[in-house]
Length: 237
Length: 116
Image (tube, rainbow over all chains, first blue to last red; front, side):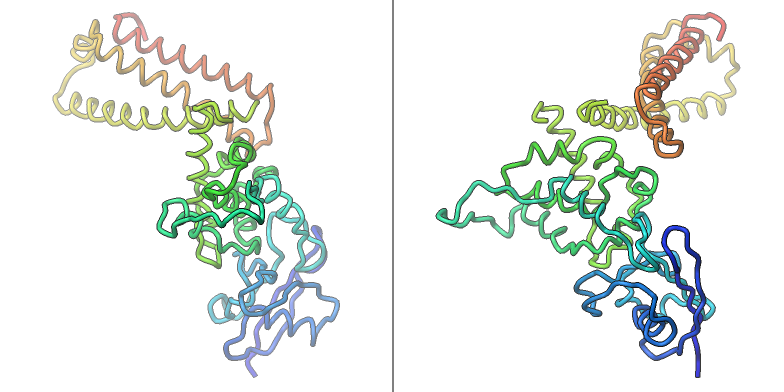
């Protein structure tokens, strides 16, 4: 039977790669490989997954140096010389093996004021937002983010500046900046300004390149840069 | 530094980059034309000295460099060496002033007739 060599990160920050050999199967995904290792080779291997079909985003890892959803990554596409190297997501503390602590990632969504603030009550009528409006189209372009952390792991600026909010949080802020119902625009623009915010982005586009949903946080961040500068010059923030 | 200042610095760097793109283009084209025409250094100085338009152009060039380079250097120091804070900002401000003085010294030498 054909086999595949797999190097998997073991331990926390100060761990090392451990090598396993697993059967090579047709249409095998990287998540299948990790699951095989845990079920047949070493039950102590820690990893995270849920849906297995590219909906939840919880199986994101670093595969041969690139951040990916392992459930949607076929071994065929990434194996180099019959070998696959699997590590936890970058830029996040490692809990154990392939599991990262995602708290700072989601805390930054909160810091970027990633929650909707409205003015209406349940007694008011629905706000009418035309699907054809410029704002609504911008929201549509970024709203499908499921918070998997792939962009955050792929971002160079996060690795250089630990306070940087990161592509996902800024993408979320951009969708709310374009939400015509939201009433906390000035506070949000102030939250995403400056050295740890949108202006730290160097437009490397790693986030856009790696996003499994095909979103472009880079475009949203560029929009935020313009919106924040405009709000600053007009004295709104 | 306040967020407002950070945003204004970012804006200043973008605007100075636009000015620099124009200035570098004009400067390079002018140099190539001058060299291909076989002008000597003395002949070039003869055309630049006392010429208010070139003086204004190169003064703008120097100002754009003095604004653009220190802001970029500040980001590089912060991201690669972790140097952030008021001491770094002071160092950056001083580097901007030095660049401006250095550049204007050359501008005055070429357009006023002194020694560069």
